[in-house]
Image 1 (cartoon, rainbow, N blue to C red):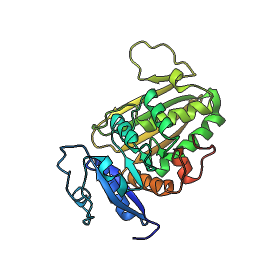
Image 2: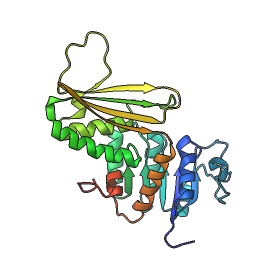
Image 3: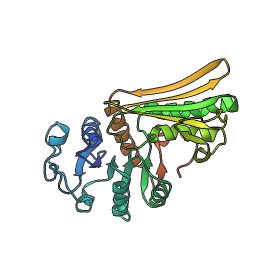
Image 4: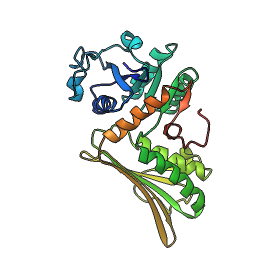
Length: 276
């Protein structure tokens, strides 16, 4: 095995993203699957990960207990659910491991737990691991600063009917990027859907609209609407491997980082701040 290899584990290996992540690790030079974990009772437990990915046999069987495979990996990638992710973080404390978190739907106190864990663990945490979305967030900040309060901001997003949280983590990240650029607090100015007699639009609000249908992988549009013109920034994902490849890239980058809370702007080298 090359000394440059990063040994990677996948948590939630049997999920939609877990299977994609197994394939993404296999195709990236310098990364290798050395562990996989899923919930007890899953059919994949004790089975070679190739059964999940459809690739070549790896000699790595899926475990139902991350503690039993801690010595096998350097970095673990987690796209699961908030409670599962937080339980994983507790298991990793004191282990000198690294984690890439792609789970969304955390509440404020859960986000605080992630920030606390980052004081001793290197963590990449992003709402979306697409390279294009990361660039779009930077563009949105620039557009919001230039357009200012004279333009209404509305954010629409669409995902497949299996997605359980709304708005999406990516939509919220976009909202935060715009709100921060406009010196607003998204928690105070966000409007999540409208119904009935709502009155005239408050110009300081940021609206969100959500669609859940079919097999849509992910579509996001931020609309800046002024008098006489509109500017739209849109990102459409057509292949879930886009997110998986970005997460694996983040895992490879994280292998040389110290404890801290990073996002994809740090991974791509376009961050304008220090990690939190």
